[in-house]
Length: 91
Image (spheres, rainbow, N blue to C red):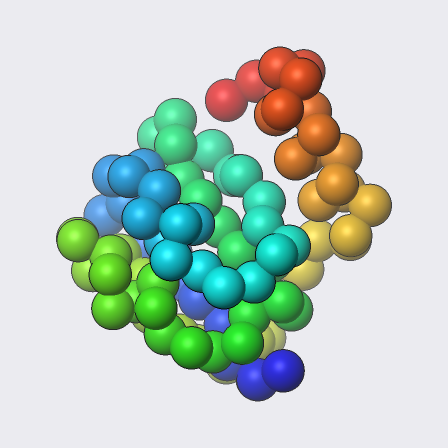
């Protein structure tokens, strides 16, 4: 793993989901940002930079892990992903 992780500028994010689809890691979490924003669990980031490269509005940068945002417990991530899939978590 790397010590870098993606940080999203939510004022720029348009919720297109491209970052989600180009990310090679499995642990992803959907976090609302103006309705739609895909965010990778920071500790799972490999630092490949694909999300940065493909973001059409340049809303993502790789930063040191400690500046990437809150670290979410894996149990919470599972609950959010499952909740989204069954429609129990509101956007």
